[in-house]
Image (cartoon, rainbow, N blue to C red):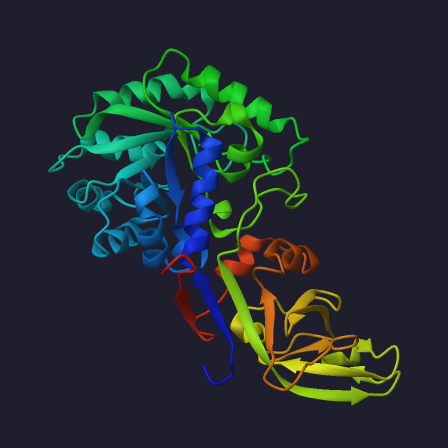
Length: 365
């Protein structure tokens, strides 16, 4: 921690974002909080613990993540979004009361042949156009019957699909996917789920019985056009460093590897104790926003493994040791991601253990 580089997660922000998701969903719908990939890089157990009072279920990628939630004492329904990866996972899934998303014929066959200690909950994945996982619409009815007849499957089979373009509120593909989903499930009993964060906030028709917010819980907008037109979200993670050097350079002097950026005038340049070794994107270009001592400025030159240079022109009261915010409240992660040609999901998930992760609760007394 001596470098001052750290990722701070505000548990109160997670809860506030969950309340926003609840409000968008409406009282009649249930909420499955997506906490896969180590809680989008925020820490699986701590995230789930903060969300537990307001979530009806959790969604994870695999059995290991589900078992981590059980080890943390969480007894909520837990849904494995890719289902079992082998037949050996069926028994422990049943023993732990997990629910499985079924997307492939071999999984159906495995469930039909299995003799489990308890029947498992199942969601049938419908491929409505994402073309990643799931059964084509014309195969849904027969697959549902096969699952409903399997003694290892709980009596109610759910239906689930994933929206490919919901982040673009002008793209008609979402409407086509929803129409295909409804046609595929028509006349079949069981709960439906389609809405991810973008669906929940931007496509009311996608909300169905269960909603599955992910990125919005962590305070980033799910939309390609940023934060326009939806309830405010609070970034839960702040990636921070500190100012370790202040240098003055003449006009035309280069800064950083490759001399890709040169000072347009005589100016102060700061060095912040964070780099791509801490999860900050190496490809973040000059001009990427950053905050130093509470004042907004920009990255200059190439990002190094342990350091990044920043423009200090126009900033007041800045001294060695001043805090630097790479993203968080005041520097929206979507803005940093857009500048770096990526998405906030990747920023969060790529923060390694090195900068350290600490937890705060701004609602605690």
